[in-house]
Image 1 (cartoon, helix red, strand yellow):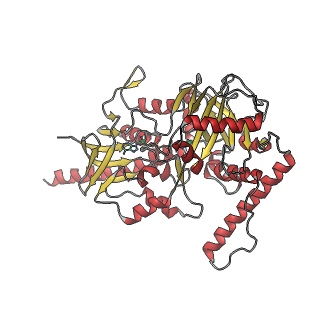
Image 2: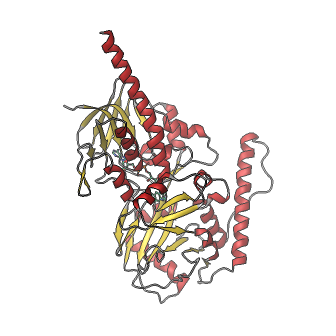
Image 3: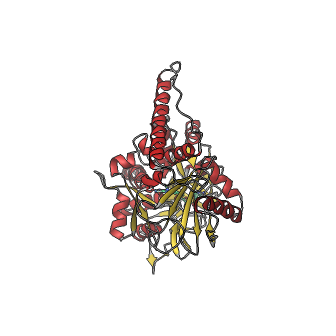
Length: 451
Ligand code: FAD
């Protein structure tokens, strides 16, 4: 038998925790949080590597220094989270070719400008095609071909779309980005939020309303409530469910709905792309890369797009750590996830030897996160196609009966970011859920009154 709670929150990432916190603060005490993994945090996750804490998931607080204040930045500041200013715009002046030569800044700047112009042109063509299918632009935008063009195309599209179209995060909160470099990890912020409403002792959450290792497999819903079934055979009854699983999980068959979700919902879920973003960490016995000002980020230009293109050294974050990070995305991420870490280490060393010569030492350790193959994630973050309209995100976000959908992917302005999840869940979803709960309460009061 099971008791019935007002709300079951599925997922204990930033979204699930912020939704639950707001509900608790508004008097909804009988809630249950079901989390599939053995920890809270979700895509905010640190791991000890090479003697320091590295962030496998979210690493930056993006959008700082603007007209409005980023709420995640505010919380981080209150907690005294250690951060480090990042400026990867100068990466474009540290582009190495395969023989280890750095492209002269003139050539790099030229290629960069061409790539930005071409991307803008492509966007305009897309817009024009939406209005009038027949009027295809005649000057085809430049297709990147040479290694430097490919590298810049990768940086532009997989990192810095801001230069091509306005990104709400930067418009609203400012263009600065800070890397979290704190031994307690980015997840410390989440632990502190959880402590505000969950019973904690000596830094450990002991509250029985948080249930870890509970993989939700089925949501049976009706006008009267929702029955939640987990993989280990437990059943939870709730008046409402707040589902914060990622867009990748929604696209997978992990959770089944009875009755099935309506077509408009599943179609919207399919329309959102899942971005895979992989930060590979490499530990070295010593430093062999330049470390002066404006050298934190560097680029490798190879004839294959996205092949170990984007590099960062961690000397600013953790001086003396001798750690490099290389970022792969999408196809390259999936390829690397499927092979052994030794294989990946060999490839990365080949790339580093191209850039810095044959005599550099081998890495002594490697860490390869696998967001794509994690069945509780199935990717890194949502990425709405540029031409998609707000209807898609609104449909993904819209409740179905007593099930509310939340998470980073339901944020209209800030999807893909920590603050997106924080705001979507902590403001929109919890407000909508509270309204329904209050309506029910009023209904019940009236009924009692009539009796
Ligand atoms: P999640 O953190 O995914 O939380 C959902 C939770 O639901 C998870 O804990 C999951 O285990 C659980 N769950 C899933 N399925 C089930 C189930 N069936 N039953 C029970 N529980 C389930 N953002 C930034 O702002 N800055 C960055 O620099 C940045 N970089 C990133 C780099 C990487 C590699 C990745 C992966 C993400 C990055 N992001 C970044 C995005 C950011 O991490 C996410 O937007 C945010 O953490 C998402 O939070 P969420 O609560 O919506 O989802």
